[in-house]
Image (cartoon, rainbow, N blue to C red):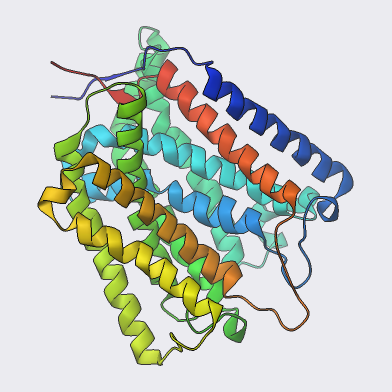
Length: 380
């Protein structure tokens, strides 16, 4: 029997929503100023560090946080685990919002944004560029995600004849949509790792490896499963809905398998290359922090009893999200050294714009779950 989804019947505009709106408006105002005054007026970016927090968080971490839909699609449509299907719709929503704002952030970060349209003209770009492949895949995936989310929007108006027709068409096209929606993130999440492979000796050997594409893909999968669990528990708590404990406990085992595979391969790679794990100063400290954030939740996720404790699941999920974020910051910013004389720390406007985009994403999530059938209906 098909699952039933319903909107959360509460007010959209609340005190937390207004706080988020204030942060979002501040960020949007600074974005407008960035386009008037240029990147130099609001950032500490330089020739040595052309990528800062906007790329490291908004794109690298933001797209990984948006991999909930990707991870759940693999589980449901590839491995035929349909018992997890109730989690797919909310996971797709987080993916839609995460990837859409990541795409927006790219155009905030581009210096000559007025040339951005050339990305879609094959004769104007280097088709051998990894960066072009990443940009095209992210752009295409944003479109695919909105198509995947379209049935949720149409269901609210299913009494309308055209909405019913399009719902049938989208359901018939679901296998193709799901296949493309799995292919595109697989390509660009791995290619994000490739971007730092070509950095060569500028990236610390603690992170520089030819296996970076695989590590970025596995870390994105782990973050996708983790954000699905965190979102499910948080929405159940704040909207006073029943918890999906049995499903999340089973999902914990899947997540543990991905994290374990990542850690085993990461350790094997470090040993094979003889990386200076203990002798890299503060980079060693960041390395151990990153991997500790992976290992501690793994210990709890492999325990059946702990996996049924919602508080443990929630904290483990948050730790894995932080682990993935630290790993990506380490691989793109912390462990990267362009040469002597270059320094980078984000300016306050960079941080404020990032907070504004995150706030905008949370506001959009609250709006959609309260106005559209995103979450499973409560029974009993």
